[in-house]
Image (cartoon, rainbow, N blue to C red):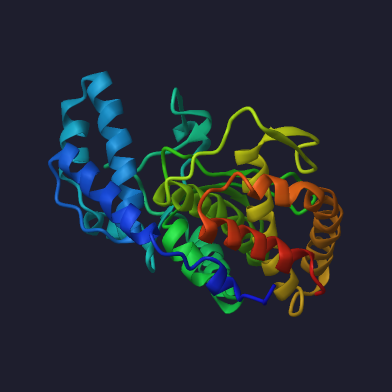
Length: 296
């Protein structure tokens, strides 16, 4: 299997068209005129969910805002081609769309703190330097920073299928760690789009042991873990060369952990991939894992 760069691993026909179609449909539902960039795609889902919340709460002002807001109206929240959200813990929402907390952009959303801006800018530069700039531009268009934590604390991050293009993550004082977690969650968003764009339907009753969860998981969750952790390995391996001190130790630990887990997962990867009906999607996942388990 020939080697592929991170940029090539996340280049897949069909995703841009899928995003454009989804954005157009949401714009039609809202009666809005949204363009069709990756950022518009992410923002459109925030506005759609916000409109549903507003309608249920009979909040006419919020509903009107969600129906009329365009991405350009959110420039005060931007960091380059991304929107950065930095809500307070009390601002997070819980509802039927997610078992975990999330946040939707609102008319009263304030710009993120200068510290958050600095961390995100540095993380984006690092990700781009090592080949993951396109992934984050296309699949982490909206970045929601949550809690600042130390390297010795558990870092939580997630993405939601109902809010594609958005990443929720804790962060530390070290931008390399933030870049790693942005890449991980953006990878989940990418795979969701890839499967949808190519009409891949995975069986819910077929499971494989996931060393990341320590339990059997449906093929969908198993492949998501393989893909997302493979990309974090590729980033961590590259970023480690210039890292020093605590960050270097942290990345070394991450790479050791993933090597052990991939040794287990690789045993059934081929069988799991056999359920992916789209050859190109299957090949991208297989290539990523092959790069991750190959020599550094």
